[in-house]
Image (cartoon, rainbow, N blue to C red):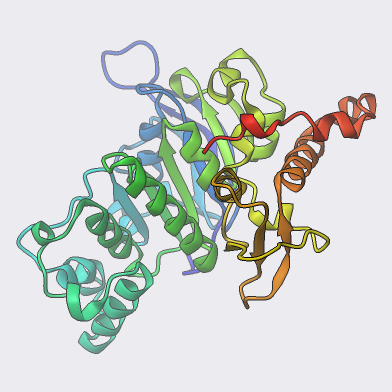
Length: 351
């Protein structure tokens, strides 16, 4: 397994516990593309965490095949395998008697890295997750907030530069504001690093913010639908999937479409105009519009103005995304694009 993004393949993966007739995970087959973040979404008890834990063999499968980068990991020493897979859990699991630096360095030390390399890696990762090494390296976990501890948990999982990261509801214990900030920070981090990530959650909005693809899992990890967020919102496979997506598709789209989708060079602001980068979402844009601003300037990463966004361009962007995700026959039947653009009223956009 090389230290670059790798594909994960599950073939007929099954887990049956002794004395229980029905399997906990039943015949799961799927491919997680290299460098993508795939969310396992489902209610408690559906088998999503069991499925994930079989990948690093914290739980041994009863039958099936698991390949990571083409390698059959069921023939690999499980301890050695886990050292090559990052793992982040909701309870974080930092060692309370060790400093933050020593927590992050734990796996590199087990791998026999030189001291200078470990020190450099710890400083690099603390900086990467937004924690000043000079301030935090010598602190202990009890001296950090919950959000800071989660950042350290991510840094520790990345310490040995693994190609795969497994995350089991890592932000679930944080407050809503901290959770959203951590979600956005991690999404940016994952896109920069290009790791292959499996992320377990029961929160559909979190899945939309994070996922390149979402696997909606039913009982015994049956895959009800496996699709990109836009396709999932526009075309839920059945009533079970629809119970997650709900009816406010256009509202949910605001949280996953980026600000540049609504940027129009022809929209010019007058006077003081708030600015957002392309990393922001349409939800961020609409919050500023609802606060009373007529337009919002959208800038690229160099600070260059791409255009302005207002309620009209936001509606247009949402309608375009909905149309793009629809099946071709449905799109052909809906020729009234103006009606689509008006399907989201200003009052339906949440603050």
